[in-house]
Image 1 (cartoon, rainbow, N blue to C red):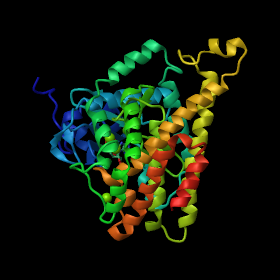
Image 2 (image 1 turned 90 degrees about the horizontal axis):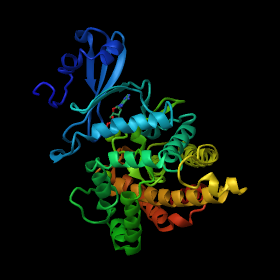
Image 3 (image 1 turned 180 degrees about the vertical axis):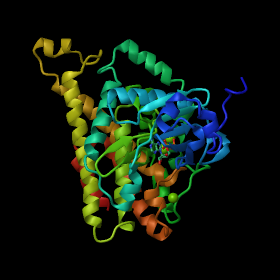
Image 4 (image 1 turned 180 degrees about the horizontal axis):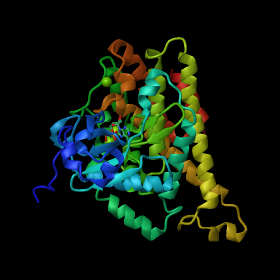
Length: 413
Ligand code: ADP
Ligand code: MG
Ligand code: MG
Ligand code: MG
């Protein structure tokens, strides 16, 4: 009907449109005339409002029927809010406390009312400002490990897993964005690409490298056809909010089933881009802060592995690598876990390199580099990042430990 049909909210209409929702009035205040609404969306896609009142504050996130970054020339289905809602619910179940609490979901209006994270700020801003977050690696390593393991047939009943894969298979528009912008556009002259002047020879080198493009396509094939686990799908430093000693993960609207190494690979790319951009953002503390970033990568990987091995021992309740084949026959299944992790890291390092490429070459760049005003300053830093990305893609299956990756970063810096 006309009054339930989707309509984008704005700050002035929000109180009258959502004022009777108990989930809001309980948390913000009973009189919507007293609510204060500010639109704070800084992402590429959606509207995000902070709604404040005498009782407290909540976030209202609403999908737009197009890509905000580009405009209504690029339509994008509203149903993505439905998948974001389901993803948040699953993540909350698999890693309690890692994501904002959901208070209300309206499918028709494509909106989610959720916990307002405060005084958290976007991690990317902290990395640009040179701030540290205590416990960051623990939170991120555990989140990636628990969501990877608990969303897979290592843990889930086969029937539940299939039902969930079927559900998320309905989210076709969002994966198409990743397939194009992340995996494909950087390697040809795609219409929406942009890059810093001066990088042309580096870009030509990547496009001349047939072996590299084959490897990227192999990673894409695994991304589109492998449904190992439910991914966050967009786990960059702009999808993490933190204080000085707590981190939370937001914005899983790119959730889809895919390879277990995808999220942590994308995450590490964003730390590496923060690392390579630091010479433009830091002064005397440059070396110390760059070391901290690499330490976060190393510790995140260690926490990830430790948690994965722990879950392997304690929660291996799915159809994969059952105890009947190993422990029940008096055998140790550690070699099987090693093999799963080897495949996972191979996927992660390839995705890491690809993400390092696409953030400098295709549509959506990141502020770590974009915030460097002088292109002559920016280009050489991006060139280091692109070169390391190519090395990661070429050597993904040969990388034996995260220490090899941080050593590689120091070599390119
Ligand atoms: P998009 O999908 O458009 O990228 P995000 O979910 O990333 O939207 O949200 C955009 C911005 O809104 C974030 O960068 C953050 O500043 C703010 N934001 C989103 N969710 C919350 C939250 N739960 N608490 C506080 N701020 C939030
Ligand atoms: Mg976002
Ligand atoms: Mg740029
Ligand atoms: Mg988003």
